[in-house]
Image 1 (cartoon, rainbow, N blue to C red):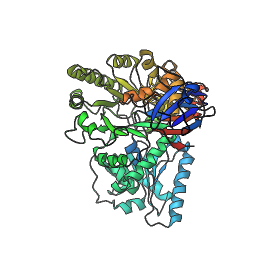
Image 2 (image 1 turned 30 degrees about the vertical axis):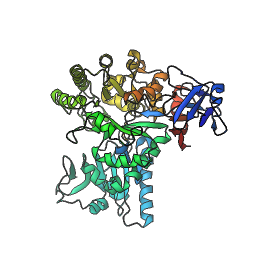
Image 3 (image 1 turned 90 degrees about the vertical axis):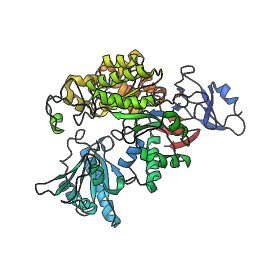
Image 4 (image 1 turned 180 degrees about the vertical axis):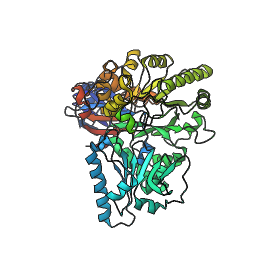
Length: 547
C-alpha cells in the first residue's frame, strides 16, 4: 500500500517512541501512521498520488495531549459570546479594563436590544492593580447595556444593574441551591453572586449551552485547543447530560480534537460498567469515557485544601480573606471517599481524584491502596490531579502503588510569586515533578483550563525552569529534564488516559495526530520553549490548524 502523505526535510522528528526515538521522515496511510524511518525508506513508499509535505527545517512531533482539560465546561465560560479577561491573556489590569470597555462600546453601537457583555477570568491575585469589583462598579462601566463578569475560579460573579433587571433578580428572588446573591442591608441584590449556580445565572445567556448551540460552543472550544497543538484532551468534569449531544456532534464528524471523558461523580445513580459505556460510544476513537472524577479537596486560592501546615500572614493571603495559619479541609471523610472510589473502580472505571493538600493526598493514597488490594486490578492507573502540596515521599509512595500524577506545574509559571506569599518556603515544593521523574513515574502536565489557558509548550518550560513571573526559581531540585516534560505532554499523558495504543507517539499503526513547530523544544534556550510557534496541527492525517 502506497503512502497517502509523506513528511520530508524536517530539522528534527521526535517520535516519542522509545523503539525508534528519531526519524528522518514519516509516512501516513490515510488517518494512520504507516512508517517512520530514513528518507530513502519513506520515499520508497510513495507513488504519483502521494502528497509530499516539505517541512523545510521545521520540527515534527506527535500531537500534544492535555491530560486534564475541561472542554465541555470551558466552552461555556469562554464561549463564542464571551470576552476572555484572564490574566494570562490580557497581562495587565488596564488590558482587562480596556477589553471590557471595548465590549461595552461595541454592544452600544450595535443597537441590538438583546446585547449583553459577558467576560470570564477576573483575577486580582495576578493583577493586583485591578479595581475592587462590584455591581456598582460595573454599572459605572456600562449604565445601560447588561454587563456580567466572572471570577477566574467560577465561584464568584458580578453583574450591573441592567443585567439584574434583565434577569429579573430583585429583593424577592430566592437564592438558588447552595449559592447566594449577596444583598445590602435592605435585602436588595448588590450584583454579586457566590458559588454555582448563582454565579452562572448572573452571567446571563452567553454561558447557557443550549442543545441548539452545543455544536457552536464546542466548535469554538476545540478550535482554540487545536491552535496550541493539542490533538487529544481529557475532559475531567464531564456532565452526563451532555452525552447525547456529544454523540451527535462526534457522529457528524465535527470534532478536530479527541476527547477522553471523566464523568463527575455523584451526578447520577447507576453509572454503567466501563465495557457497557464504551461499547455504546458511536466513535470511541474520537470520544469515549475512560474514568470518574472526584474533588477530594478544593483550591489553594480559596483556602479549602487540607494541609499539615497553615497559610502565611501576607498581603496575598489577606486579599483572599484567609486567616494566617488557616488549614483547610477535604470534601469527604476517608469512608466517604472509599465508598465512591470502590463503587466505580469495581465497575472497571479509572478514578481521578482532584487533590492539593498533603493531608488529603494521604487519604487518597490510603483509599487507592485499599481498592487495589480489594479488587486486584493490575492496571488501574489510578490518578491524582494537581497535587500542589504533595511531598516527595508521597510521590514515592504513589509510584510504588502504581498511582499516576498529573501535575499543575503551570501554577508556578503564573502564580509562583503568589504561592510564595501564601505558603512561604513550602511553596518551593509545589508540584514536585522532579521527584516523579527521579523515581520513574509516568506523569503528565496540564493547564486545568479554564484556570489557565491550554499551553503545552508553556507547561514544558514551567517544568524545566520552575520560574515564577518575578524570575525566582521555586525548588530548583524539582526541575525536570526536557525529555521528561515533553513525554508528560505526549506519550505519558496518553498513557494516563488509556490512549497510549493510539496516540502520544509517532509509531506505525497509531493515529496520524501531529504538530509542526517552528523550533525544537529540546534545543532552544529553556526560557524560550514557550515562545516556539505552533505552525500546524494535524488530526487523523489531515491538517486542522495552520498558522
